[in-house]
Image (cartoon, rainbow, N blue to C red; front, side):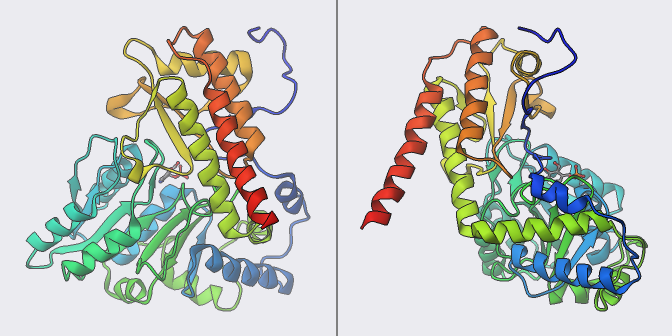
Length: 402
Ligand code: PLP
């Protein structure tokens, strides 16, 4: 039943790994008259947002809120903390890591890129070895993606911190949490991260257009001597104005309304419950993929992502054709594939305002689309996901009864 009318009934299944569907409560919170961004009502809103977002990054240090997508916050992290010609150590976990590396080069930094086959996360031992080789401490920052959205591999940030410390290296530690924040545990302070880059449109369940830099004292100190050109991205102007509840330029007021409600919602559910839900949906998805007889792109369980699963198709099957067929027939969108693996895999996002039945509906659509597309799969993926989700609920029910 390929589309032959201009209307599609029901909600679109937006299973891309962000932007994620907006909860109605967030949409309603944003549907409000514009207020004076230099007035007292705004100052209250801004202070609430600026304090609230710290609880999501698990930090007591300032978090800068930009009116920009994640790419802007990437640039802000680099230009505020580094100087032209600085060496930076980065890990090629996938497409997004590559884009950040390309940006570093364009800004006049000298990235050293640790290669991977895009099927694994960042290896702390390799980072440690590279830092130990750098006896002169020329490397000024280690930049890692917590979750590589392009491949569905999560890197162990706390372990990488320990690796940097073991090497006795003073480099700053910059981490991208754009597709992991508010979906899986993240501890900016405890893990000794200097700049955490975040985005609004994934675990925070907001529209695209807002992003973050969570800072450390060391990062703020580095910004005082950093020589890369910055104006809009300057932390200094932001920190000064944020102290009194304002921004140096017109802020995204409606997004701030949405952000405060998103933070409330995450705490009402409980961050640990939010993380457990993401783990459950991710495991259910992987079990479906396995039952179909397909492979996930992330090949090591140590690195499995709680927010996105990339599914490899057998040789000779085009993932882009499958995505288009699934969209036509079942009104579901998946994430695309990139770079050296373009066309070979598709990504199922399971993050944000997503629950057990959302993912089961999405997996049902996927199983039908795979069959319709002639991909040789075994039946029973949805059943395997259902069995897993039901078993988790049964376990919780037993625990509650004890
Ligand atoms: N980093 C990661 C891990 C991402 O997933 C994305 C986008 O999806 C970006 C950076 C770039 O963010 P944006 O597209 O919001 O500029």
